[in-house]
Image 1 (cartoon, rainbow, N blue to C red):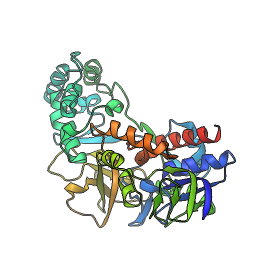
Image 2 (cartoon, rainbow, N blue to C red):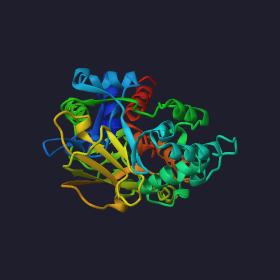
Image 3 (cartoon, rainbow, N blue to C red):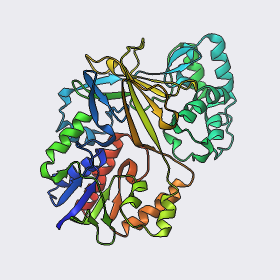
Image 4 (cartoon, rainbow, N blue to C red):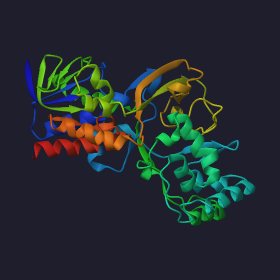
Length: 399
């Protein structure tokens, strides 16, 4: 039996961020367990058709969090990244329109602009109506009937593939506010106004996939990281993992839904875990080069199974082909390379906040701490995951 102050489950961005922060503060009594052969989690990359492809879908490094950049640049220096101004588009009414749609309606014919403007003017949030709680009603309230019916609702039906009113609205603060004034000004001046989307400026490795930085961070941990080591058992009371490793504190970044496979949960916790839902995403590579300058394209048309296309030749020199992302329930035509991410996105259902609060309280009382996308059951970009992991590790080492 080997004992450690911390055992970290999962070597994705959160687990790696936590581990490196411990080591940076002189704490070396830790071990990271990772079931895959390399570190990176959903941000891993593979060589496909002569160039890298990100197996978890499209991942890009936002430039806003300097503490994250400082950490990652130690392993993949800034000189090995390219910086891009985001180009993302939406296929709508037979045209490819820049994202966000409401700021770029001016790219549509005049008659279409008038239809969308009229709809936005009547949106509930513009008219100061009370915010509804049901997801579908919220989308219409937020964007107006036209954008909701032609873009937001079909796109969300595709990506989540559930009854949308099972979702809450507490997680939608990241969506930009819709301003009739800004939208009208955009149409009059033929240029975008209003809030910029996330990843307005992003970094991507010059010669590698996004997984390279996480692989290097994993390699840098040396024998503190055990790859190809899935969790097979956890004795919750004593925090003994796989019968071999004992922790004072377990840091978990793996989905709570898989915990019952190797740990005994009391009935009241199992009931809360049963309220958690997630979706699986299929990633398919296609060799064709599409006639677009976009880095990625949103596809709300429900006649197509996929919801997003990533055009790697527009952000990775020397690459060709694109990959698309599809909810596994809707999978259609497979590419020449296919990968399924069983745990891709946690679902923000109405019951989730209360369920997670109870799970995390129960686990904290047993020195088991959840961090990251799956430890907190919250969709977050990799830079956010690292930032929160760094903060959590500092809280431990600084008392």
